[in-house]
Image (cartoon, rainbow, N blue to C red; front, top):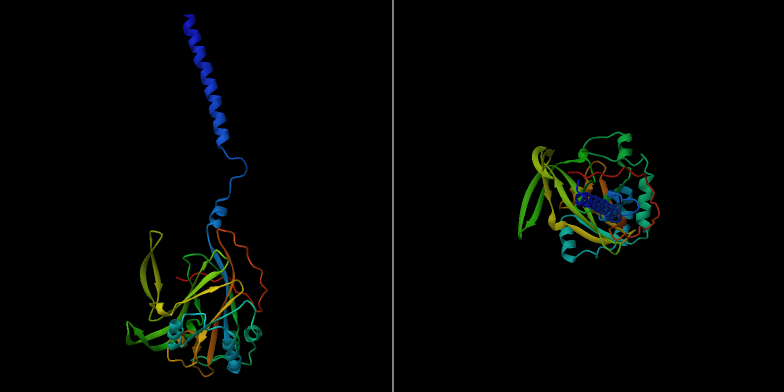
Length: 311
């Protein structure tokens, strides 16, 4: 065996050990120390979440004066003038309240929460006292809305569908009339968080009508078969309002017998007239900039489970 050959092998063996040790040191230094951040935490930091409370408040016939007092307390000038005109023409009324609970709204919430069966609520058919008591109760739902999410709010359920609803609408400068069968008003609610802690709340009226039908839609590259009724969306009546934490958005109808679409959403002409209000309170917004939440005083009334998105 040659000595030169042995020395060469020893040299290459030592060099290999040194390189391996250096590589391990490089790997150790490139690996971050401490716990690896949770994936959900990273995702949550990039999602803007707006939390709102949705109140569905029934108005009893003897509360007519109290309702008028509420409309005097709210600010109806916060929306653009043309939008207010279009809403009024279709029987809608919208206003905003500050973070302090107004006397009329406070009383409506308290009275609704403590509603008793001695104020019957009618329908197209006679109902029992037990059914009337259930219909008179105020409901409250908590919603957490993220960008792209739309929650459909039912002021009345399927039991209150209108057999027929005739509407006259201004489309492209022309008055057009159409009759809808089995009509029910839905309110599509969405929200976007702002960097200053406020939120832009958007409400779009939609009229569900006709008979259920099957249709295909694509979601996340997957074709989904769903059953639903056709909808008429009133894009021109979209309400978009910036709210600060604790502020309220009130939406209702101009009258029980309004000439427009408002009655399909908020009133029913029955043996005992039924009228309701949609009240939205903005709680807080949590965005990627970690906007601090605001602590608010609780409002009377039982809380229903969070409202799921309805497709």
